[in-house]
Image (cartoon, rainbow, N blue to C red):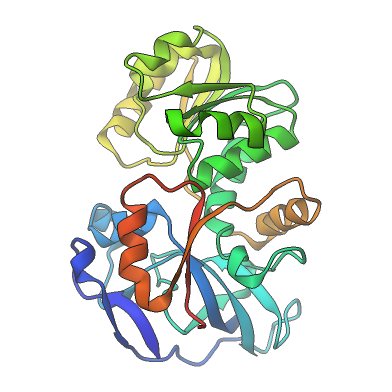
Length: 319
């Protein structure tokens, strides 16, 4: 089958287009999916670059990508919730494999049927980013009506879902974003406050002891420097638990009521069903920055690695 893969860690140049073996026969609890699209996430290039090789123990060749959407073409003997022809989406842990290929084999527990009000390609943009923010804000932070939430990286894929999930719970949201996205944040997402990180000492404009939750979608904030913005029992949540700043943050939080937490996203079909329902109820909207064809996968990764994407980036495999 056709695929985009790599045979060693490295920069964008290690990605190859070619043929790899088809997935092996499905087990009783697995389904075989013909991939329509996958979307890109910062996790993808961090894995390819070898930044997480000490914990992933990856073997080669490896496909890239985590999110996917596609059509079920084969089901295992124990499958009850899905049938051949179903349009599905999900997030596949790259500890096992990626999604940048014609076909993937996955456990049924990570799947959901795509929302009825978006197309199959758009649905590929949802799983990893939405699940990360759902599990961070709802399950870890336990936000409620009136919670004051500060979101760093608000205009990226994960941040956009974070804002919308926070608003479902009637939280008060402050976004950290660039100057060019300030009005977009205010007009489209109705954030309560927006802060421009391009201004020197931009955090000085925020009040001490103000936030119940600081959610760092980019993983580039220092807990030690920002913890004063949290209320005494506030929570700082990062999406990058493996950086040295995160290790320091965990140690510092041991001596503070303000807690440092990491979200390590769990690929969970039940959680994804909740996200699906919110999309169908129009409580969550999908924002796509760019769509690339499979042959343009290199260009897609080159774009996301600029860290200037405004929404999600999709690669269509089935074209």
